Figure 1 (cartoon, rainbow, N blue to C red):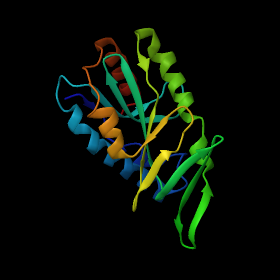
Figure 2: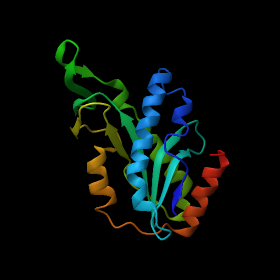
Figure 3: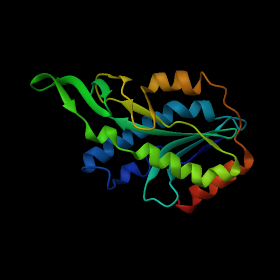
Figure 4: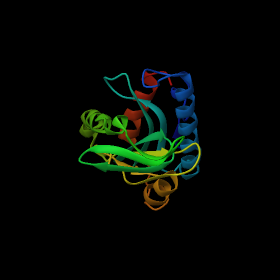
Length: 196
């Protein structure tokens, strides 16, 4: 089996990123849902590797999911947001959706952070000496109720997907290869260094 860790493990413990325990629990449930949807594609010993809840070298941060196929490395972040249409205009993201007072626009500053650019740079610095190709990160957006349309959402340094679209386009629709052994070994060391 090429699956390491448990989805939502550190999110369920809260953290500085969460406003409160309720938000942390929602985030953990979202990460668990994405993990459950991904794991069937990584259950064979000869499949690509899937890591959950991976520490980032030199930062007090984690990567929700990491896919390693050959020398390709794909960071996957899970978000659980309100239903609506998400769109980015001039590097500013908004949501059009129904609220308690009817339909409205809402500016989402949290959706425009440079987190993905930073994490990708960190992974490149750490794994590039082994020949790794760090792919453009993926943001998987879930909703507790209703649906999120993320076709027009352009996160900085990443691509946004719904869960079904991510699996169709990046997992089941892509050739996944067993991970490069040296790369896998280095990521396993990183994974163990945080005691996950």
